[in-house]
Image (cartoon, rainbow, N blue to C red; front, top):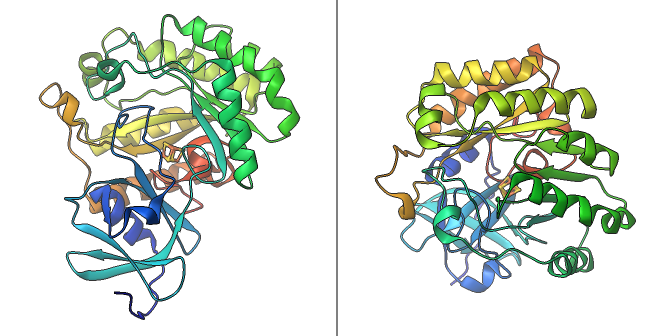
Length: 337
Ligand code: SF4
């Protein structure tokens, strides 16, 4: 049954609280259709997700019938009320995803990976690699559905990092006609940034993943933090300060001090960090420490990132593509104030 309720706009604190839970249950599955299963990154293979928009903020939550967050319809068409253990905490709307997320055609090319980051389901699931035709069809259908602000492309590594770079380069001539910014987040390779820049890519994201060097060695075997840093620096030289991004996953046992240091190390070279709370991945249970960060921790890290962004004159809110444009999974300075 629907009922009239008073509006509660999303605040910074409410968004951090929702992100700290990370999941939601919807009263009626139709409310979130079409929903897309996540095929990229640590939460690949999850049951789907829901995007809530309120007060110019957006949050993405994984669908989970056991979640303490319940989303219910209100008397007003399209509006929803979000409850935590029967207490109303925020009102808003559900946003439809065009392809993976609202307002973007965000495509994961290869759902396979030769690496074995211990928090990630992709190496376990070893899913499908899209053909060029499949990818172009998804992008076209996103443009048919709505107002697409950006095309963003990510990929696991099916065979080699160079192979993924070539997959993106092969697509680029077909994407120019859409006349929107294009962001690419793939495994960094020497010469990769130059080639991506030359074909018209606007922004890149190479993920440093872990704030603590010792934890990185354990949870990302075969990857080199030093190599990622070298490629991030080169990317800034080509794309410019504030046009290069890097995920730092939160909840792998790192300290707040190490996160602060990593945000600063990235900012110093002109890279914007995406502070990404980890989902405790059921498929990787016991393989590494994973703990979703609390609301308090997320707010503390958010304040850190705001301060460091201001110090280095970086503007996450001006991102034209990918996660800092979307802001569903992370607290984004300048957008979530
Ligand atoms: S923030 Fe990034 S990973 Fe999260 S929903 Fe948006 S585009 Fe996808």
